[in-house]
Amino acid sequence: MAPPEKTDYLSCRPELAKRNFTSKAVENVISRVKPMIGDRKIAWMFENCFPNTLDTTVEFAMKSGLPDTFVITGDIHAMWLRDSSAQVFPYIPYAKEDPQLSLLLEGVIRRQTACIKIDPYANAFNKEATGSEWVKDDTRMLPELHERKWEIDSLCYPIRLAYHYWKATGNTSVFDTEWKAAMQLIYKTFIEQQRKDGATPYTFTRQTSTPNDTLLNNGMGSPVNPIGLIVSSFRPSDDASIFGFLIPSNLFAAESLRQVAEISRSVTGDIVFAERCETLAREIMDAVQQYGIIEHPKFGKIYAYEVDGFGSHNLMDDANIPNLLALPYLCPSVKKSDPVYTNTRRMVWSKANPYFFEGKAASGIGGPHVGISYIWPMSLIIRALTSDNKEEIAYSLRTLRDTDAETGFIHESFHKDNPNNFTRKWFAWANTLFGELIIKVANEHKELLKNEL
Image (cartoon, rainbow, N blue to C red):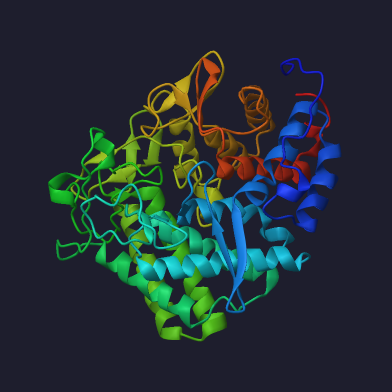
């Protein structure tokens, strides 16, 4: 299927002087990969999208001799721990050859460390102590916080970023006293949210007409049976969980704890803490195996999206990451060939998933955050990133190309029948993730990019 007619594809990037940050290494990647792409529109989109986080969302400075990088999501001037980590993650492979890029990434890690120390239960932060529109939420709001929704993945993503940055660059300076204190807070928070004594120091309610923006039971959420899993009051979409034990986020937490343990053994020398992290990771994995895998009448053994430990479970998937589809992308312990994952993958990309939509423009996964009939391009990107099937990858590339509403960028979501009906024209995470996909395809399946898709 040919892309929509267009006579030229002029760059949509800001002019050089107006870019927030320029990396020589990233520019070299664009120069190397773009000529490999035979489809002119995909080449244009790659050039626009891959550097979008650097071009438009990073605010880099040196403070007291150390790098500090504040990263906005795009059209919201706040820093989500999840989004900021994911936005810059695809640049890690190029940090070793670009000292300034390495410094910028170090600045993100240091800023995130400071944020976690302010409040490990918050998901989004202001650049300064300025307060936010959510100041009236009934929770422990501080002026440094933009929002205080407790989501497991908010603490996992900064670990993932720091771990892979260390592996790529060898820089251990980020694992200082402040970082170690932040990791202790993460561990403490995970233990608290196992809720083994039935209590929680975290509660949240909001005066709203949107039910998924607040929590039941005076801010505690739905009851859970303490089985060793960690409660995530909200999903990575910032929507309230139905059942508190969000399985993809718990698997992500186990992976993150193992990464902290490796750093603690190899770098900081804290063997005791490493063993505590490993013990908690094993407890989570054992509980997922016992309570998080459900026998589906059509697909066999699959991962549930959420459980409560009492026997109730929610069989669905949401496009926001971590989700079930993205498990091998975030958690190497979940293999793409694992039968439970492959069964789950077939379920979530089918009508058995209530948030899988098929329309005139595309098929894909959405979620309650935007609503019925809206597909998230992120689901198409993740499907391709976790696939070795060339037909699946080609479908994702074609669909991403044809659903950008001729903007040259990736959006938060679009209507399944009309991609011109979309949300968030400036969503940097999706843009950079698209760039990561194109580079992966160029490295592993370059024949797919040779011709017009």
